[in-house]
Structure formats: C-alpha cells, structure tokens
Amino acid sequence: MLDQHSQSNKFWQQIKLGFLTFSLITILTPNSAFALFGMGEEESKEVSQKKEEIIKEVEAYSLLQSEKNTISVFQKNVKSVVNVSNIRIARSGWWFHAEEFEVPAGAGSGFVWDKEGHIVTNFHVIQGGDSFVVSFHQDKETYEAEVVGTYPQKDIAVLKLKKKPSKLYPVTPGKSKTLKVGQKAMAIGNPFGLDHTITSGIISATGRKIRGVGGVHINGMIQTDCSINPGNSGGPLYDSQGRVIGMNTMIYSASGSSAGVGFSVPIDTINSIVPQIIKHGKVKRPGLGITLLEERLKHYFGIEKGIVVKYVSPSSPAAESGLEGIQKDRRGRYILGDIILEIDGQEVNDYDEIFNVLDKYNVGDKVDVTYLRGDEKRTTKLKLMEL
Image (cartoon, rainbow, N blue to C red; front, side, top):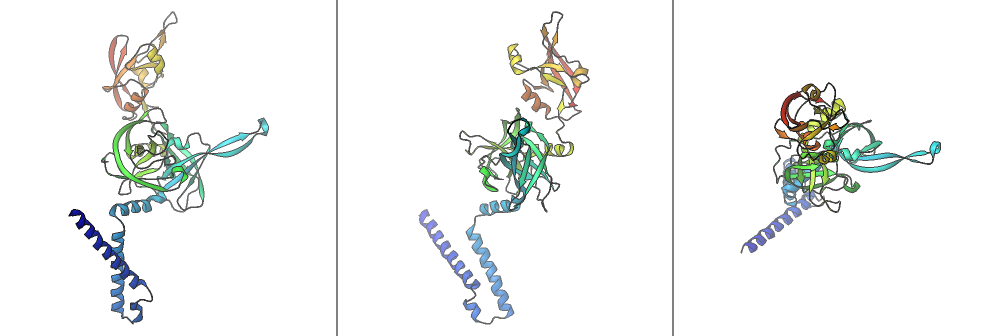
C-alpha cells in the first residue's frame, strides 16, 4: 500500500513538472501565443513575474538541497584553491660541461591564505623542490612562488607568490574543535592532476593521532570519507558553510588510491602555525635545551621508561636547573645522564611524546620536570626556551 502511494506521488510530481516545463517553454518561446497579441505594460509585468515563479519552481524540482549546497560551496571557493607544482633542477653531462634543466617532481594542492599572496600547502608537497609554480582555476597564466617557511612536524608549508593575479580570494577559516562526527565535509583539490575537483562526504572521526612526514604524530587529525587521492594533498577541507576546517594530507590505502579513509590537519592547528611562519619564517617552538639519547641506545641500556638526556646546552633552562647529560668517569667509562620521566605530570617516553607535550606550551612558560638521577627521583622547575 505504501509503495502504491509513493508511486502515485511520483507520478503526479512528474505530471506537475512536465506541465511547469511546458508552461515555461510557452512563455519563453518567441512564437508562442503570447507573442501574437499586443500586451499592455501591466500584462507584460504579470507574464514576467509568472515566468520567474515557474523558473524557480522548476529549479526547485531539479536539484536537492544537499546538491545545491555542494554547488554553492564549490562556486564560492574554487578560486581560492590552487595547484602547486614542485620542480627540481636536474643536471646532465660531466663536470664543467653539465647542463641544468627543470624536471617536474610532483604536484599537489594549496589554498590562498591572504591577499598578500601567501599560499598554504603540505610540507611533503614542496619537499625537495628547487622552484614552485602555482596555477589558479580558469587562469591560463602560471605564477612562481617562493618558500616562506615550513613546519614538517605538522606537515605545513607556506609559499608566497612572486607575482600576484589581479585579484585573490582568500579562504574563510572555520573552527575544527567544534566539528561533529557525521557532519558534511567537502574536499577541493587536484587529484591525479585533474584540476579543481570536488568530492563530498562526512566527518568520519576527530582527534586521530597519525604519524606525519616530520617523524612525529600529528594530534587531532580529522578523518573523512571524502575521496582523497594523490594530488589532493595540501587542498582544503570545507564544511557546509564553505569554511575551511582542515587541510587534506594523507590517506590510508593499500593501493595508494582513495579507500574512504582520509586525514586532514585541523584548521585550529593551521591557524596557530601559519601566522608564525608568515611573521618569522619559522615556528617558535618551546624547548628545554637538551639533546636526547637515541632510542636504539636507550633500549641497549635496558631503559624502558622516560627519555635519557644526552647533552645539555650551556646557558639553557636545563643547564640552569641542574639537569645533566651523559658524562665520562676517570676511567673513560660513560655514565648515563638524567632520565626525564614527566613534564607537568605528563609521561614522556620518546621524542614524539615530549614534542607533543611541549607543543601545548609557549616560550617562557614554566614547567615541572620530574627525572631520575641514578636511583633518586627528583623534580625541578624550569622556564621553556625558544628552539
């Protein structure tokens, strides 16, 4: 019974749509009956108004609301998304007769950050490149760009155009901390070199911890089922309002192509890093002023918990607080340095963990460091320095 009712509704909707379309054709056709009669001004206005109403109603039947939203986000933001080409200088020949030529080393995506011409992309998109070329949607001209700074630990890089187009369209940043699992997401980028492609999906999860190209885990990563492929890296991830909520960075796939599991660096992380790179050319990171013993040597000595201080920089906060690195006794034997166990009560067992713990602080903040010296457990307070 329900199926018959549904089919009946669809039938009458098709009839109505057909009638509306016929009416529209009749009004718009120059040789229609309306054109055969002389119409006054009032009649002409009435016909125009009726025509607009019919057009709107036909459009309402032709597209779903979700489709309209996707189209709107694409049209409003496509000019903010760029293609980034990584070019390397290759040499052929011998010695003084060697010739240099440019070789494409890869391509990715990026997005316009501001009207000064700063472009945000992934570090791995520009890694190893000698020069970079940026292209825009429906713009036949290409634009050279230079590196302003990078932050490999979060897979973020900032370029600046040497010459700008007549008009730039910066993105509108959103907020990633308020994202809800299940909400709509859209990715715009250049997968496989197919420029300015949009794919849509949802936020599959938030707060993922994924190891990046910088060797440390990137916390708070956004997981999405938007189709992300090689070439999408560095492109923006949008919400339904057209705000950037992340930067598409990597996929989980056995084949190398999209498997519905993509990851994006959250916009809150990007917002905390990009302004620093633009202003200083780097990210001001807080640190203790120590060098850590390598993991393989740490395990060789049978140390399972904590991180071993290998070297303490002179005049650093660590030196001033009395922390000690590896030393030699009178016989030339090595004595292990202090073993840091916690920072402000948070356990640290490797470089990845101490990096992410300190990443929550600013230069100049004070922290409590708990460490072992021999069998004695100690605590000291020190002020974080700029690395």
